[in-house]
Image (cartoon, rainbow, N blue to C red; front, side, top):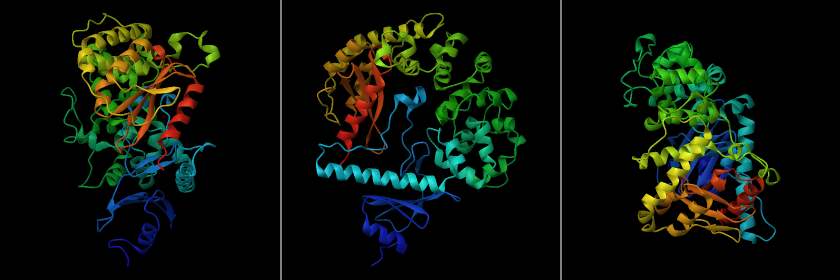
Amino acid sequence: MQQAGLFPVEAALWRQATQGVEVKDGKLYRFAPGQALSARVWPEPAAWLKKRDSETWLPHEPHLDCAQMILERKERKLDMCRLFGTEQTVRRVTEWRPRPDDPPRRRQAVERRNDEQRKVREYLLVNVPAEVREWIGPYPIGQWRILRMIAHCPRFLDLVQCNPALAFALASYEAFRPPACVAVPRQLELFPEKIQVSGAQNPMETVRQLIPTRQRDLCGWLGFQPTESTVKILRKLPAGSCSIPILLRLRTALTCGWKMEFCRKLPALNTSVICALSERRLAGRLTLRFLTDLLAPARAVDDAQREDAEVENTINFGHVLRDTLWMLRHLKDFNLPARIHSRRKLLEIHNLLAREFMQVNEDALLALQFPPPPVEGDGNIEPVDSPQKLLEEGRVQENCVAGYGNWIAKGCCYIYRIHAPERATVCLWRERRGGWMLNDLEAGRNQGASAETFEAIEEWFQRQTIPF
């Protein structure tokens, strides 16, 4: 008997697979226990979700990642670590490697996982044009919506190519237009009279009408100042740093004259610069030299070069700034210097904050109860499963890992200490869908870990997390 609400193709596939990936008639089906995702990516992208106890397929917006060839049911949680740092600081394993000593059931699980990913990769390679994949792949979130915009309005791709940040904001315009965004700056004046959108329409039709409009008028419609300077500033923000929270912060910052002047003079923008300008306690103490330094990524070095390399160049200052801003919000009485001229000064402030944070919060931290580690350690990787160990890790590595105590107690993340190939600290973050992902991996004093350490951690992580 055909299951209620299913077409014959879907019903047959669902009977055959309770979990896995199938491609049929130009659609990709991803089955999970109790639910199924059906997606068509090109030339008319559309997706539907159906639960086993439901009668109908409902429109759905899945998670698409053209860079790593991923198509899943849920949009992944915005990874602020990826936004703040370089791609090397966040690794997500997409190709699993079985080990010779793995039991048969684990080897089968590895083969099944790789087979699912291979089907998704082949489906996206065949169906999504290479030029489209290349341009939307760097976006950390919202790729499915941008793909739909390009498919329904080919001129949208031109906007993605010349101004990725403005294209992202336009694709997510509900977050920038009142009343969806209630925190519209009072100094900001919207200019709805310059753009008239006829009738109550869906997002695709709205964007189709807006695409021929001048970019400065699009900025005004989205709540930015409608000037050529704003357009040029938005062009400085790469696709990899685009997200709704970051663009809303930038919009607010551009209402301040000296902040806008800084943005004009900077050769580029990234998440670190925007967050630094948005922090009330920090913004007035920044200099143009310091903001320019924040644009330089951390330089990866091999172990043989580590002793001769300048320590400052191996530190991910995006992560240092992220942790500094977080600790400043908890230490209201911390005295900041009058000016922050360099990254080295930021590192000094970070280290002082970390020590003061541990002193102030040590009693509260020791009272916490940590859950069991989600992933078992091995001889070289040890879970930090108690507040005492967490405090010790922060002191030995000279970082602010002690500030993660509440998140660990709530099950949001977990810390592991690494003894080999080098002494380092790794953090696993819990994803919204329930799984765990590799996140921060850094050596002592926030220095970047070596490539050998990255490979060892990835191998450990995949060996421990494959379900079977």
